[in-house]
Figure 1 (cartoon, helix red, strand yellow):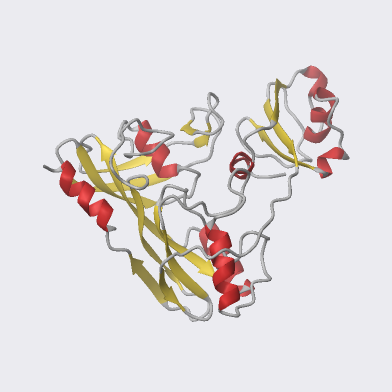
Figure 2 (spheres, helix red, strand yellow; figure 1 turned 60 degrees about the vertical axis):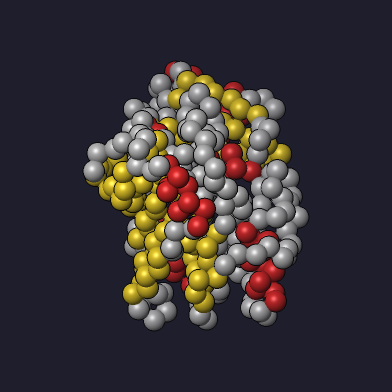
Length: 314
């Protein structure tokens, strides 16, 4: 079973089934209930399908038994093998040692291979780099090659890449435990208060499954703190700190607060002259998984970002 965010990244065309649990399905395992609702799907075929399940907006275990009134969503597609190989795709390296490197992911570059983006991804470029440097890359999930977190295609900025299995596991655990500090600069439409805390349960939108939304029911807790770095005439430049790592979190929180990020194709109508969104992952700090040393990296504003901010202030 795939996490819902990974499923929708991988598939544009898929089957879906939604149903509300009635008395006939109470106390039935979720996988059994799905096969009852969808005759074309059997419990054995679940082993060969790529699929994702939500119960009341949350991911369940297959052994979970249903309760009266549960809202079940089932999405599935036949598994498609995506060829993965090295490609000479450039990306700036900010720092590197024996265990990890810090890179500056460009705007417009997809991180992982997926349907519609089978090649030309950051992962392909990292594989090419590792091979050229004679670094063993046979660890972790295929297509990840040391990538322990992600940025959206149209977001630019700092990412950590693990260079061995031990570091990969340690960094993944650090992200899970919220031990890595991430700060973004966001250029938004509108004039915001000087600082704020944006909270709200984030889950898949019920109207458009490619979008996330702040939900009254279901979803996962999320918190984004922000402060103003600069007021412009009709825009605001913010520093945003993540306390959770939900899909599209900053984009959803700011849009929900009526301050959408410029050039955000999903959540904003504001278009400006910039290669991607007005969102830059500008700062990372964490404890080095091997040495224990405190590491801190700050990315200077990309020239195109600086030029846009100045032009919007005129």
